[in-house]
Image (cartoon, rainbow, N blue to C red; front, side, top):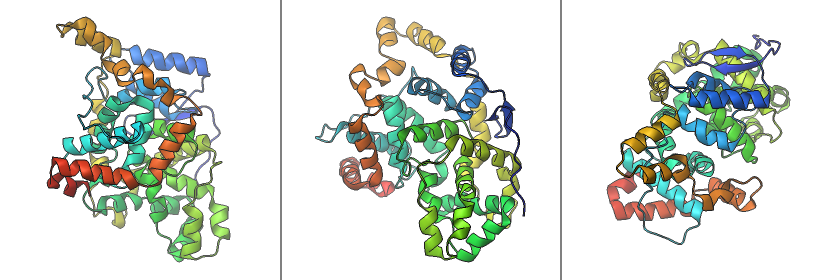
Length: 386
């Protein structure tokens, strides 16, 4: 039985541009803030440093930094954001209204993509951090790269990604792998983890944000490596459970809320380094399907390396506009985050939490509203949403 090699921690581990992992020295919070700031103002922007910061202990530290770094990780120009979608006004709550508008806008922009249940969890997480316009830009990119396999008309590509889970477990703990095979539990217990980037299953929003830092800086398959790490972390519980599909599925489908996420993130990166997707894909079960997320990842990573800092983008935007003062005042993040909505991102805001988890629990009224608006646009859009 092979075991994951444990290394003594001499610093944080970080994901390189090719998806491999290196260990970098630990640094204090103030030093990390300074490093991130310097990376953001470098010309071109130091994307590798931002990736390391997002993946290392503590992630990006604050929502203010996330609003600056997340767009850079996805190669988004904050001074060239999409306009707000022009939807008819309704009596829906603000967050739900924005969420539906965002999803419809992405579907309208990308007719080849198909909505899946759980997509709204990703959208609402972005919405609560970066605002409506930035969410449209970020979600558009994520939908065409990291989330692409989930947005096919069938579940074939999603099943393919889930199929990486068992080979990872087999490499690390053969006994656990064999137990789960005998129980015939499969991998469906991890489906909602994967397609929502864990946004649907975690009750504490700060852990969701920490994982989004990690995933935005990592290979598209990193969520499945984290799933494997969570299962391995619970090895003792799993083996003590009756070897029955229903019993094991019931245990694994409920993520404990007190997991050591920093440790699990570090271990996930180590797993990715030891058993990269290219190694796992040699297995027969993983050779029959081509993943769009995986095949486009390297080109996507390369495309992020030549971004200008926001100060330069702002100046170029102003110079290219006949109303430069107006452009500089109403472009970029300030336009994406109106002051009157700043309270939405305050810690402990019960209204926001209720809205987030209420939307995540079920599509419910949101689907109905999407369908109504889609019918106004035409039946062909409604068909592609579902």
